[in-house]
Length: 264
Image (tube, rainbow, N blue to C red; front, side, top):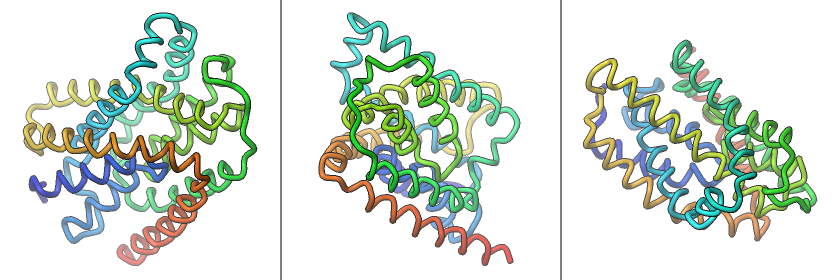
Protein backbone atom coordinates (compact mmCIF):
# COMPACT_ATOMS: atom_id res chain seq x y z
CA UNK A 1 0.00 0.00 0.00
CA UNK A 2 1.40 3.37 -1.03
CA UNK A 3 -0.24 6.76 -0.68
CA UNK A 4 -1.44 8.67 -3.70
CA UNK A 5 -1.51 12.46 -3.71
CA UNK A 6 -5.31 12.56 -3.57
CA UNK A 7 -5.28 10.39 -0.45
CA UNK A 8 -2.83 12.73 1.27
CA UNK A 9 -5.02 15.72 0.38
CA UNK A 10 -8.17 14.02 1.70
CA UNK A 11 -6.40 13.37 4.98
CA UNK A 12 -5.19 16.98 4.99
CA UNK A 13 -8.78 18.24 4.89
CA UNK A 14 -9.70 15.84 7.69
CA UNK A 15 -6.72 17.00 9.76
CA UNK A 16 -7.51 20.68 9.24
CA UNK A 17 -11.08 20.20 10.45
CA UNK A 18 -10.52 17.70 13.24
CA UNK A 19 -7.44 19.31 14.84
CA UNK A 20 -9.47 22.28 16.05
CA UNK A 21 -12.92 20.82 16.42
CA UNK A 22 -12.67 18.61 19.55
CA UNK A 23 -13.14 15.28 17.78
CA UNK A 24 -9.54 13.94 17.61
CA UNK A 25 -7.67 14.52 14.37
CA UNK A 26 -5.37 11.53 15.02
CA UNK A 27 -8.37 9.30 15.63
CA UNK A 28 -9.98 10.35 12.37
CA UNK A 29 -6.76 9.95 10.41
CA UNK A 30 -6.12 6.38 11.59
CA UNK A 31 -9.76 5.48 10.88
CA UNK A 32 -10.09 7.13 7.47
CA UNK A 33 -6.65 6.16 6.10
CA UNK A 34 -7.44 2.40 6.00
CA UNK A 35 -10.78 3.14 4.34
CA UNK A 36 -9.00 5.05 1.57
CA UNK A 37 -7.19 1.79 0.79
CA UNK A 38 -10.25 -0.43 1.23
CA UNK A 39 -8.81 -2.20 4.27
CA UNK A 40 -8.95 -2.19 8.06
CA UNK A 41 -5.29 -1.56 8.95
CA UNK A 42 -3.28 1.68 8.82
CA UNK A 43 -1.10 1.96 5.69
CA UNK A 44 2.70 2.29 5.99
CA UNK A 45 3.86 5.89 6.21
CA UNK A 46 0.71 7.16 7.94
CA UNK A 47 2.61 8.55 10.94
CA UNK A 48 4.91 10.62 8.72
CA UNK A 49 1.93 11.99 6.79
CA UNK A 50 0.07 12.69 10.03
CA UNK A 51 2.94 14.70 11.50
CA UNK A 52 3.34 16.71 8.28
CA UNK A 53 -0.35 17.56 8.39
CA UNK A 54 -0.07 18.50 12.07
CA UNK A 55 2.73 20.91 11.19
CA UNK A 56 0.33 22.51 8.69
CA UNK A 57 -2.25 23.09 11.41
CA UNK A 58 0.53 24.43 13.64
CA UNK A 59 0.86 27.17 11.03
CA UNK A 60 -2.85 27.91 11.47
CA UNK A 61 -2.32 28.41 15.21
CA UNK A 62 0.70 30.64 14.68
CA UNK A 63 -1.21 32.88 12.27
CA UNK A 64 -4.49 32.99 14.21
CA UNK A 65 -2.83 33.74 17.54
CA UNK A 66 0.15 35.76 16.30
CA UNK A 67 -0.67 38.82 18.41
CA UNK A 68 -0.97 36.78 21.60
CA UNK A 69 2.23 34.91 20.76
CA UNK A 70 4.00 38.24 20.33
CA UNK A 71 2.81 39.23 23.81
CA UNK A 72 4.16 35.96 25.22
CA UNK A 73 7.60 36.83 23.89
CA UNK A 74 7.33 40.36 25.20
CA UNK A 75 5.29 41.36 28.19
CA UNK A 76 3.59 38.08 29.13
CA UNK A 77 6.66 36.05 30.08
CA UNK A 78 4.88 34.19 32.91
CA UNK A 79 2.47 32.54 30.47
CA UNK A 80 5.42 31.52 28.31
CA UNK A 81 6.88 29.74 31.34
CA UNK A 82 3.54 28.05 32.04
CA UNK A 83 3.41 26.76 28.46
CA UNK A 84 6.96 25.42 28.58
CA UNK A 85 6.28 23.59 31.85
CA UNK A 86 2.96 22.27 30.53
CA UNK A 87 4.70 20.88 27.44
CA UNK A 88 7.04 18.59 29.40
CA UNK A 89 4.55 15.69 29.83
CA UNK A 90 3.74 15.53 26.11
CA UNK A 91 7.43 15.74 25.23
CA UNK A 92 8.33 12.81 27.48
CA UNK A 93 5.41 10.65 26.31
CA UNK A 94 5.88 11.57 22.65
CA UNK A 95 9.57 10.63 22.59
CA UNK A 96 8.88 7.37 24.45
CA UNK A 97 6.18 6.34 21.98
CA UNK A 98 8.33 7.32 19.00
CA UNK A 99 11.21 5.19 20.26
CA UNK A 100 9.36 2.17 21.64
CA UNK A 101 5.72 1.94 20.56
CA UNK A 102 5.16 3.88 17.35
CA UNK A 103 2.57 1.34 16.14
CA UNK A 104 0.28 2.27 19.04
CA UNK A 105 -0.61 5.66 17.56
CA UNK A 106 -1.59 4.03 14.25
CA UNK A 107 -4.19 1.63 15.69
CA UNK A 108 -7.78 2.11 14.41
CA UNK A 109 -9.08 -0.13 17.20
CA UNK A 110 -7.46 2.03 19.88
CA UNK A 111 -8.97 5.09 18.19
CA UNK A 112 -12.40 3.46 18.36
CA UNK A 113 -11.96 2.76 22.06
CA UNK A 114 -10.73 6.27 22.87
CA UNK A 115 -13.32 8.25 20.88
CA UNK A 116 -16.09 7.59 23.46
CA UNK A 117 -13.71 8.88 26.14
CA UNK A 118 -13.42 12.10 24.15
CA UNK A 119 -17.20 12.17 23.88
CA UNK A 120 -17.59 11.81 27.64
CA UNK A 121 -15.10 14.65 28.22
CA UNK A 122 -17.05 16.90 25.85
CA UNK A 123 -20.38 16.10 27.50
CA UNK A 124 -18.83 16.92 30.88
CA UNK A 125 -17.32 20.14 29.51
CA UNK A 126 -20.65 21.26 28.06
CA UNK A 127 -22.22 21.03 31.52
CA UNK A 128 -19.30 22.54 33.43
CA UNK A 129 -20.11 25.97 34.91
CA UNK A 130 -17.86 28.67 33.43
CA UNK A 131 -14.76 29.51 35.46
CA UNK A 132 -13.33 32.93 36.25
CA UNK A 133 -9.57 32.39 35.78
CA UNK A 134 -7.66 33.75 32.76
CA UNK A 135 -4.89 31.60 31.31
CA UNK A 136 -2.15 33.98 32.47
CA UNK A 137 -3.39 33.49 36.05
CA UNK A 138 -2.93 29.71 36.03
CA UNK A 139 -1.02 28.08 38.85
CA UNK A 140 2.05 26.07 37.86
CA UNK A 141 0.51 22.79 38.99
CA UNK A 142 -2.59 23.50 36.92
CA UNK A 143 -0.45 24.02 33.84
CA UNK A 144 1.19 20.63 34.45
CA UNK A 145 -2.26 19.05 34.85
CA UNK A 146 -3.39 20.45 31.50
CA UNK A 147 -0.08 19.29 30.03
CA UNK A 148 -0.77 15.77 31.28
CA UNK A 149 -4.12 15.87 29.49
CA UNK A 150 -2.29 16.87 26.31
CA UNK A 151 0.19 14.01 26.78
CA UNK A 152 -2.64 11.48 27.16
CA UNK A 153 -4.13 12.79 23.91
CA UNK A 154 -1.19 11.38 21.96
CA UNK A 155 -3.37 8.25 21.92
CA UNK A 156 -5.50 8.24 18.74
CA UNK A 157 -9.16 8.99 19.38
CA UNK A 158 -8.47 11.09 22.47
CA UNK A 159 -8.88 14.67 21.27
CA UNK A 160 -5.99 16.96 22.17
CA UNK A 161 -8.11 20.10 22.09
CA UNK A 162 -11.02 18.39 23.82
CA UNK A 163 -8.79 17.00 26.58
CA UNK A 164 -6.90 20.22 27.25
CA UNK A 165 -10.02 22.39 27.11
CA UNK A 166 -11.75 20.04 29.57
CA UNK A 167 -8.71 20.14 31.85
CA UNK A 168 -8.62 23.92 31.60
CA UNK A 169 -12.27 24.18 32.54
CA UNK A 170 -11.61 21.74 35.36
CA UNK A 171 -9.03 24.06 36.93
CA UNK A 172 -11.34 27.07 36.63
CA UNK A 173 -10.47 28.74 33.33
CA UNK A 174 -13.10 30.73 31.48
CA UNK A 175 -14.23 29.06 28.25
CA UNK A 176 -12.37 31.51 25.96
CA UNK A 177 -9.24 31.20 28.12
CA UNK A 178 -9.42 27.39 28.02
CA UNK A 179 -9.58 27.45 24.20
CA UNK A 180 -6.75 29.95 23.85
CA UNK A 181 -4.47 28.16 26.31
CA UNK A 182 -5.22 24.82 24.64
CA UNK A 183 -3.89 26.07 21.32
CA UNK A 184 -0.96 28.00 22.77
CA UNK A 185 0.06 24.80 24.56
CA UNK A 186 -0.11 22.93 21.26
CA UNK A 187 2.58 25.09 19.61
CA UNK A 188 5.70 23.55 21.21
CA UNK A 189 4.16 20.06 21.18
CA UNK A 190 3.39 20.13 17.45
CA UNK A 191 6.69 21.83 16.63
CA UNK A 192 8.57 19.22 18.64
CA UNK A 193 6.78 16.36 16.87
CA UNK A 194 7.69 17.91 13.52
CA UNK A 195 11.36 18.23 14.48
CA UNK A 196 11.43 14.67 15.83
CA UNK A 197 9.95 13.31 12.61
CA UNK A 198 12.37 15.39 10.55
CA UNK A 199 15.32 13.90 12.44
CA UNK A 200 13.84 10.42 11.94
CA UNK A 201 13.57 11.00 8.18
CA UNK A 202 17.15 12.27 8.10
CA UNK A 203 18.38 9.19 9.99
CA UNK A 204 16.35 6.56 8.14
CA UNK A 205 16.45 7.97 4.63
CA UNK A 206 13.62 9.11 2.30
CA UNK A 207 10.11 8.59 3.69
CA UNK A 208 7.58 6.24 2.09
CA UNK A 209 5.51 9.26 1.00
CA UNK A 210 7.15 11.89 -1.26
CA UNK A 211 8.11 15.04 0.64
CA UNK A 212 6.41 17.21 -2.00
CA UNK A 213 3.09 15.47 -1.27
CA UNK A 214 3.53 15.99 2.45
CA UNK A 215 4.24 19.68 1.88
CA UNK A 216 1.08 19.91 -0.25
CA UNK A 217 -0.92 18.19 2.46
CA UNK A 218 0.50 20.53 5.09
CA UNK A 219 -0.58 23.52 3.01
CA UNK A 220 -4.14 22.21 2.71
CA UNK A 221 -4.39 21.42 6.43
CA UNK A 222 -3.13 24.96 7.15
CA UNK A 223 -5.89 26.59 5.11
CA UNK A 224 -8.67 24.32 6.36
CA UNK A 225 -7.36 24.66 9.91
CA UNK A 226 -7.77 28.43 9.86
CA UNK A 227 -11.48 28.05 9.16
CA UNK A 228 -11.85 25.32 11.80
CA UNK A 229 -10.09 27.24 14.58
CA UNK A 230 -12.41 30.17 13.94
CA UNK A 231 -15.40 27.83 14.06
CA UNK A 232 -14.43 26.29 17.42
CA UNK A 233 -14.78 29.59 19.26
CA UNK A 234 -18.31 29.93 17.82
CA UNK A 235 -19.10 26.35 18.86
CA UNK A 236 -18.19 27.12 22.46
CA UNK A 237 -20.08 30.41 22.48
CA UNK A 238 -23.24 28.68 21.24
CA UNK A 239 -22.97 25.69 23.58
CA UNK A 240 -22.67 23.03 20.90
CA UNK A 241 -19.96 20.92 22.54
CA UNK A 242 -22.43 18.20 23.50
CA UNK A 243 -23.23 17.49 19.85
CA UNK A 244 -19.56 16.72 19.21
CA UNK A 245 -19.58 14.55 22.33
CA UNK A 246 -22.41 12.38 21.06
CA UNK A 247 -20.76 12.23 17.63
CA UNK A 248 -17.51 10.92 19.13
CA UNK A 249 -19.34 8.28 21.17
CA UNK A 250 -21.31 7.04 18.17
CA UNK A 251 -18.25 7.03 15.91
CA UNK A 252 -16.18 5.21 18.54
CA UNK A 253 -18.78 2.45 18.88
CA UNK A 254 -18.99 2.07 15.10
CA UNK A 255 -15.20 1.97 14.63
CA UNK A 256 -14.71 -0.53 17.45
CA UNK A 257 -17.38 -2.81 15.99
CA UNK A 258 -15.80 -2.49 12.51
CA UNK A 259 -12.37 -3.42 13.86
CA UNK A 260 -13.60 -6.35 15.95
CA UNK A 261 -15.72 -7.79 13.15
CA UNK A 262 -12.96 -7.23 10.61
CA UNK A 263 -10.41 -9.14 12.67
CA UNK A 264 -12.77 -11.92 13.80
